[in-house]
Length: 234
Image (cartoon, rainbow, N blue to C red):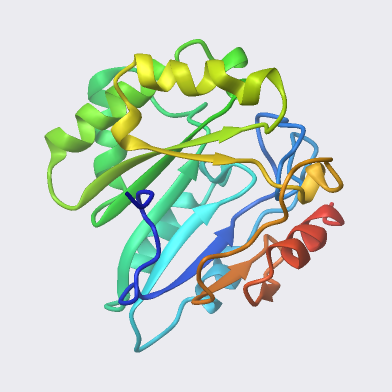
């Protein structure tokens, strides 16, 4: 069984845009070298300049933590205004997502459709957010209630060789009945985890994507080069 949101031969070109290197968590292995100290935010004009005209594309909004960008919704609207925008994918740690049911549904509806919401789960986030698993449940329920082409993906990231490969993180997702929504991967040795013994280097399964950093610089499918460029941003 392939992971959810796995690249397929007919998937449009995907643009991965790091809206900011600012984050409200400080995962010590962050692949985009982001933290609460990050101060770089992509401008709306630079964002729009990266969107293709006249061709199908998918747009993944990430960071840092993209929900902290003050123009996130304006960026969503700008992308959806283009006829070629096939889907928006939003990656988030969930910290600022509404935890009250009606507000969460309204927030998700505002993002439009087709939509994939990727919620991150790892030991660092679980330890700092006791309500994270409940948020995963609530998000799945609200996306189902909204209907349409809306998908929840839980990005479960494990540390190979540490605490029995972070078995408790995987088990928390299984015990919550969320395994069918989970993509489970081992963290890789780049970004803040550069040089981590026993961890693999990134090996993209597709070359049909472009990377954009918060300063507007774009990169071909080279995750390490993109990460090292993020490292030096203010």
